[in-house]
Length: 114
Length: 115
Image (cartoon, rainbow over all chains, first blue to last red; front, top):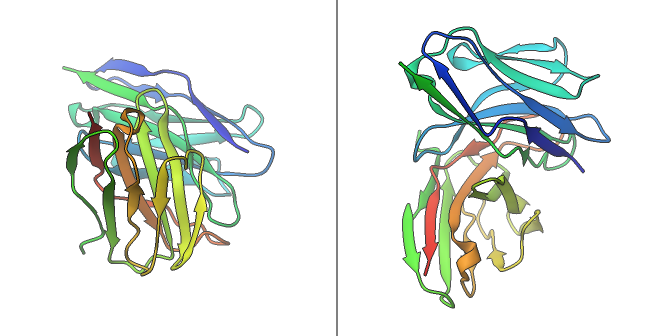
């Protein structure tokens, strides 16, 4: 079984500042890793995913994440945030086989202040 | 590109009533999923389906029933609604679960309130 812990429930930052949203996971088998974003009253959109290969993954809207196997982490970063990045962010893992069901973290609410 | 559509978007009902949430996707994706989203829990899997007529339980299946007679539809039924089932429900779909990973695509959700 897998589990995901997002270490911050809320992260306030100022516009144009850098941000890091932290995610740790636990699994006895290899996993795929994902970050999803949820804007108000909408569903989830995929930001980026790690399947294999390079541990630094680039996604949409200028976000990137780094997979660290030894620390079982998959932190999300953006060098300069915009007001439009205000949203809820979810880290998720799935197994490699079968339905590849997603296990989500609790979510981090990112608030960008002007 | 209609994608994945959930209906209704909002629903208010009373305890003990039966309510069905609809999910329709136009991609012919083989896998479909139902999640519930609650504060502090993120999203939790209720049921999923690998293909028409094949369904399986997720993490929190109690009190819910699903069916999948057609590939494009995956309705979720609360047979006797309880207040603890007040939540936002999301449907998702993906191409295939085995081998090459394809991300899940999500609908916009149904906000369900049970009084």
